[in-house]
Length: 406
Image 1 (cartoon, rainbow, N blue to C red):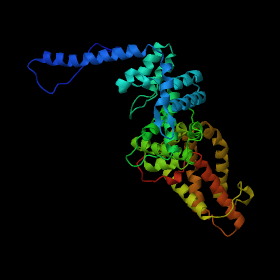
Image 2: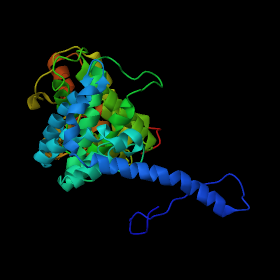
Image 3: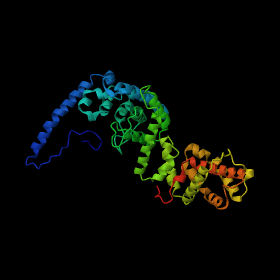
Image 4: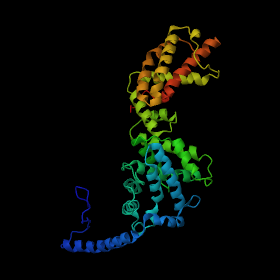
């Protein structure tokens, strides 16, 4: 039990399944059970503190993480290196992150955690504090396992974030690297939870991390232990699949998710920005028409096997509608480049929504697949440039007009 100020109280709660005539006897009986457990805990705590947490490192060599992937000591070395690399990417203290990585599994060798397994991480934090470790290092030892479940708190400081991501990514890279992908309900290494945990931390903490380079670094640290040549792509695809499940749980429609997934953005924070942008775009009056127009453009381009030009030839343009559309595409391309660079996808799609009228007019008045090859290729090139603008955010041709908007 805790007081309102968060301090631990010298009390405990139990539940009895009988209505006793002598409640005090029930209380005394439970106290008799609790006291020896508390005495054991005190003994283990005092015994563990006779040496530093770091002194447990050699014993990690005696515990197997996974037969093909080595011991917990091997895992610790990889986590230490990866946590330092992540810390550098996100602006966290590199020395503290590598220190936290080194100590991350040491409490698993303590008497307290051996007897009370639920205290892993918690005891690492307390023993680290006792040893005089930096506070963010100590906190990271506890928070490395967060989020433990859906809706759980995230690591509270940058060092803890680096360690939590490193621990999970090492497991993902290793298990996928030996071909032991989760199948059906079987997920013995909790890879789905690990993947979603990494994504939540990166998105909700708005960390500048790319799944591509992050996974490549995690894989590199295994050396020649891994046997799956496609491990990097497999891990990224798996994590993007967890994104799909996450956003569906958040109420986003499947086609909105598919529109973003089609671009395969590997920066989770960037993925989230695109999702929000497409969701907002669907509330605009122009969304349905432009989505249909983009689908038409996609179909036309897919059926054509002609080599297109690098740019639209203005002198070849004939019809007023194609001239107007071509001019607006050029203007928007230059205007929106900073938007795309800065990840301002919602603003970009709002600007692109202004193309509804010229796109509609173009398809009403202009024939694309004409006999004149030069004219035909020029019009196809213009449609390709139009499509490229939208694809900088998502493939809106995949949006269904009748979908529930979110």
